[in-house]
Image (tube, rainbow, N blue to C red; front, side):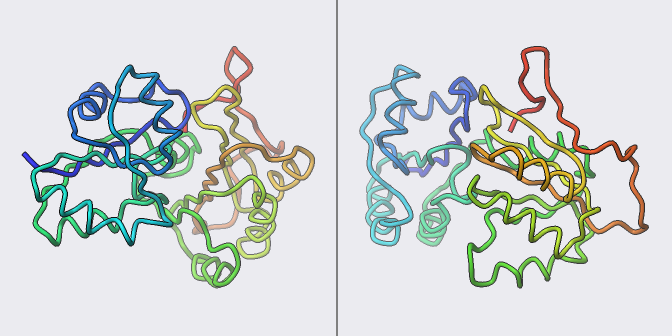
Length: 249
């Protein structure tokens, strides 16, 4: 039956993929990949040989119609990103919308994503939260932060290692240095680490320790009353017995 499958892929450890996802990747006619080289490495690890087609943010506008026509003609197709769930800060939305509008069935598999593990291990309320993904790099960045100033839900941000310090500096300016934050990098990888504390404390930490890897920043919502529950001892790192920071992104 012709269908578009949205298939999440590992965000670090290549074994973090479901049996169902592996079966889908084996059975589809071809796979749309954000970077064919990255996906080829994953397929090699899984022992799968499959035709790959490039589908990324620079060509998706030109290819979505062609892909939808191919599925409508009877093909089954899987869409993957380099890591995590497609369309979550990665290409995918345009293709899904095009297929839905064309009456093509879309099936999304559950699987890896960075935001949920980082949220859960932050220790902040996670019954209600606000996912912001990547903030605008320049234009509109401060405006968006100002709009979030009174947000009471826990907030989740993705950030490049090159902008982590700048991001925390802006958080200090907009939300205040006493706001609690949890910064996790390299989820599910060898050097995974979580640093928790106030914005001011974590900012001081990353000024002294160069940020490396992929980051998820979880910011506590605006408190209803001023005060902190911790003992004020500063940044707190969670590490397991192997020297890795605790948690999985």
